[in-house]
Image 1 (cartoon, one colour):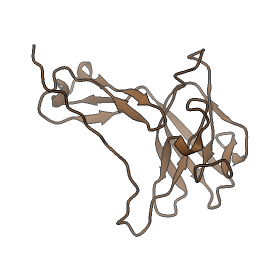
Image 2 (cartoon, one colour; image 1 turned 135 degrees about the horizontal axis):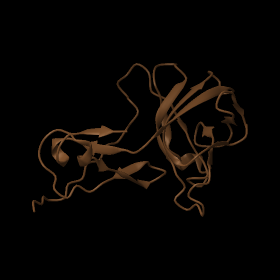
Image 3 (cartoon, helix red, strand yellow; image 1 turned 45 degrees about the horizontal axis):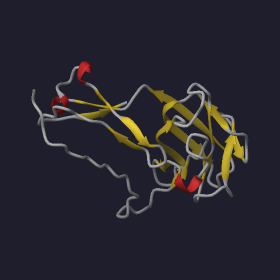
Image 4 (cartoon, helix red, strand yellow; image 1 turned 30 degrees about the horizontal axis):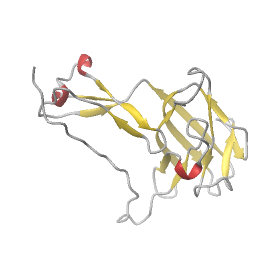
Length: 173
């Protein structure tokens, strides 16, 4: 049996400070994380003044009594409830109803207008987040190292590779 020393990889997304524009973000508070906008996962603007925000969010409530119950959420700005969008995926409005989805990991794209008074959202469910490659045993699907979300608010994903090897790897959805 091969073993290796434990290693940690930390990837942190930060706002670009050398760009001529600063990427803005919006929050995704919901039932899965205690409805706390200031602590909610972030979606980042995809281009200068695009008003399109995207990112991966684990919309699973670890405290839910029914693991299949729909998760409710909204989109906010500035870490508070003063400005929030809800309603339907095709037509979000200020203070609209909570959006609802089946629990899961989602790639989310929000398209909002400039003053965040309307918008739409696309949600694409991902099966899992994993690592594959020579570093974890090879490029075959059988070697996929599935990651687990260990902090819903910070969107921290962890996994243990018992026999990590040298070589390339990539993250997969």
